[in-house]
Length: 348
Image (cartoon, rainbow, N blue to C red; front, side):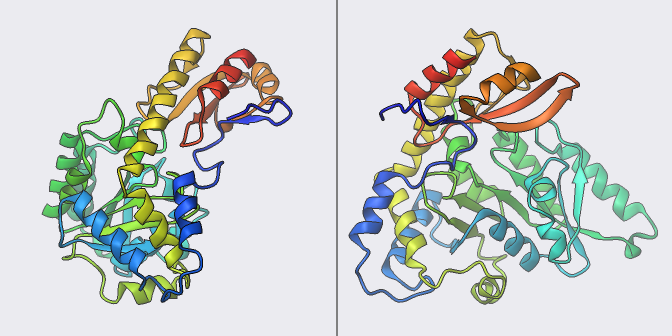
């Protein structure tokens, strides 16, 4: 990549660039093929088979939806009864950054305290016990499922033992465990994880494999344990506006992502760049908000230094730390280069 100093370098997110070149190439190569719509094409079928193989379970149900917010809203609204809500960390994406999409569907987000973006199994157990011990719980919103993100909004990861504990609680209470995998590749390829895609498929009742933030133009692949797949789910996806008529667009992309390990390759590259970024930030004496093992890094800067940095680099505001300091997020992705990180270092 040739650096262009007339255009600001961006670490704002992992979807600032378009699609990975190999994904675009497959879209180009298949562009003129006449194919059936709504996911009935050969590429959706091929991608489905490859995802099942990667998950280690041929019985899984796979669907392709348009984007992350739509996917969260469709899954939650189709799995919950009218009187149920979804448990999530108070920092969970569905609670903070989805414009009330879940509440718009008629369901409440029931929050638990976050611990570096994660919910705690003991606190979940206590929440459920308190709910059912309340003699008036028939007048309350029932906890109907548990939502987690992996990686979390803070770039942190659940360990396998943490996932096992949450899964056991959910199955004891007959509630689905739903894992938001918008950035799943960066969790799977982290150097500090002990969780595999097969573990997720085994422990979660439903999850999705993010495409939008991992090298696709758009799209997410939803994976259900067949025992919990909602009846006529495809019909409800269309009813909720999350289906593409040209379903091939999603099928071709996920078929490319799950060919020759491209999905893992993209995740691995972003992690390598994030590790380089983290070391560079340390070398510059930056203060970290928390320790993230994935592609999102969070640092705290004086407001005057941040204003100076933003003249040359695009970053994401995260939160105010105090009256004179702000936490920002820097994210890496498939298109991040070492040269961009070197440029950032010069600006700090």
